[in-house]
Each structure stands twice: as C-alpha cells, then as structure tokens.
Length: 364
Image 1: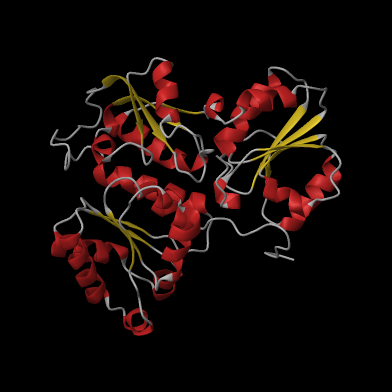
Image 2: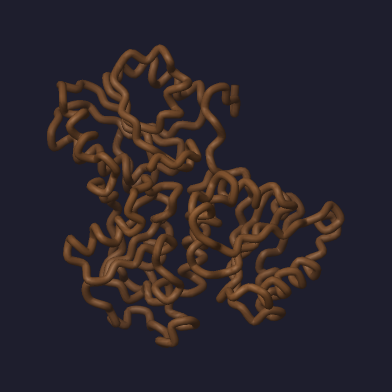
C-alpha cells in the first residue's frame, strides 16, 4: 500500500532540512507554522539544538492568521524578535500551512526587509517532501542571496568570472547533521581536508559563517558531500566558474577501518549500500578496491543522474524495500539499523552505518 509504514519510522521532512542549513549562521530562523513543526525540528531533527544555541522561532500562526493571511502580524512579530535577538539576517522556512494558503514568499521577504532592515531569505518548503529537498532549496537560496554581496564581511562584491580566487581554499557544500555521520570531533571535516593540504576549509552550514558564504565565489574548489548540495554547487560553477566534485571523506567515519575490515573479511558476491548517494558512492569505490563483488547503491533520498550507476535503486515504499532484500540475494547490507526492522528474516551479514535523518538517533 502506498505510503504505508509498519516498521520504518518517518524520515525528517523538508522544513527540517532547510532549518539545518541556517542553524549555525547567526540569523533568526522563523518556521512558518502554528508550533508543531518547530517543535519537531528542535525536539527531534536538529541535534545541535541540544549542545548549542540557535535563534529558531515558531511563527505561532493561529487559525484566523492563516485563513485571513495576516502577514502584517507575522512581520510585526519578526520585527520585535529582531530587536531582542542579536541576529544578522532572517530566514523564513515554509511548512504545510503556508503551502495550503499559498503564501507569497517574495512579498513576505520584501515586507520583512523593509520593516527590519535585515536581509531575508525565504524557503518555500511545504512539509510534504523529505529533508534533502529542504537542504537543496535552502542551500541554493543561501548562496543566491549572500554570495558576492559583501554585506557582512565588508569585502565588496565578486564579479562574475573575475578570477579573484583565494588559493588553497576549499568549500564544502551539503554538510548538515542530516547527512554527515556524527563524529566525536566537531571539526573533523575541516581538519581532515586541512591535513590533505587545503589552507582554508569553509564547511557551509557546519562551522562556517556568513562571511564565508559571501566569499564562496572566490574558493578554489567546492566539494559536495551530499546530493542535496549539488544544485548550489552547479549555481556557483555557472556564476563564478568554481569547479566541484562529489565525494564523502570516508576516513572521518567513526570506526571506518573496522568497517572496511569487516566488509573484506570474507568473499562477497552481492553487496547493498543504503545511505545518502554521495556517501554510498564513495563507500562503493572503497570496497571495489578490495573486492570483485557486485555492489548496488540504494537510497530513499535523492539519486542524481550524474552520480548514478546502472542498477542503483531509488526506494519509495517500505514494501519495495522488503522485496528488494528478500529477492536481491545480497550477502551483505550496509545501512541504518532502523531499516532491518522490516526484514527480520534476512540471513546475510549486516553492518550498521548511521543516518540521522532516518533514525533521529545520535550514535557518538
């Protein structure tokens, strides 16, 4: 039955993914809801909320606010919040409520900027898609709004094709707790690439501030570590000529060496890797160096054509997953523990690989 889940919990929705992009950037993040969606983000989908501070607000929409479209009341609330909170921009994240009533995000953006004087980003998420759709939309709007503007850094604008490149600078796009497997070291991404020779590493949304987003048009290269970051990388390539590649830094995975030892410990014939596409692809290449097994990547999330191999599988339904495992003949499955609840009869080997957007559990 379409949409029926008996074993696998619902995944993080698009508004949670969009919120994750702005969480560490120092702005006022307004979730355009009555309170439930914001509670879901802060209570379940944003692990940084428990360890650090971020100005995430619910719009607190009431029935009549939604029915009558009282945007002026919302703008007034945001203006008062801006007076009390030391922020530097406003981000408005959509939910099912504005999707149903047809909120004009462009008009809302103009009203907020006029009232508060703060640059504003709006993301038209509707709560009906998965987290990666929200990450994709928010990342794209982030770079469109701030890159090359010099609003916060005071460094002026970057002209298209100017060649004003910062040598030895790497930008990392798509880094959110939704897709990055949690490590004990919070700066593991940055430190890993600095050890590889990059002088500066800008991990947008996880450690890097808005000043680095402004200068994104000047980095030497972008690295996309999750498929949700591809749209933003393509935008920066088209506008500023910044090259990019998609790769996940496997050595920062907790227990990576042990994982690889377990994978190659015995001969494998068919292997299934279930995760976000970029991480799964990188792991597939690593396994191929040691094994002749047939390796398939499957994902419940984005499968970009430029990164997809023949035979890769886009999962949509729980029944589809059950049939895949029952009929696929895999002697090894690598993925989030939660998936295996649906296939207790699976007799092959299984190796866990955490995916926070699936389980909502911190594993470190």
